[in-house]
Length: 224
Image (cartoon, rainbow, N blue to C red):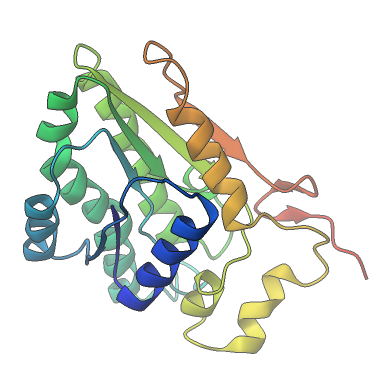
């Protein structure tokens, strides 16, 4: 099952997977807003069994300092990156436990572990997501559910930077300028796929993944 806000993107992705993987299980796209309990309830009602949950919803808003922070931005980032993750996980956890081989993969960010100037709201939200991930690992240790965090560095996607800078295409392009090979979504998906295909007794606690040319959120090699 594929769940996200934009149904057109989901339909395109479902078609792409079906064409690339002949004989794959039927893919069901479902429109989902992780900030809405009603939307999450509808998702749960549409799900039969559930063996793997990948929490990938998130996003950053702005690069304001703490001094100039917009608290509405902080609130929105927390709502999506933290409460959205908890809302969906809480709703599907009974099905994951019932499966006997459940796995929750939380895609956070390098920002969850390494703070940087202007990242206060995003750092705080992703660090909270990391904390929830660690708490679940402790709380579910006696249950048949594995917990994994995937923390990517710089990933070039269509929307992340554009959303962060509120549609300003020039500012949105700057984080990637001069970076020879940033990560792409497929690199992160590979990490998720690897973690969930380990033997059931193996729990991959955390995967940190960055481009080779990135050593920290603020330390990137750029070509002129």
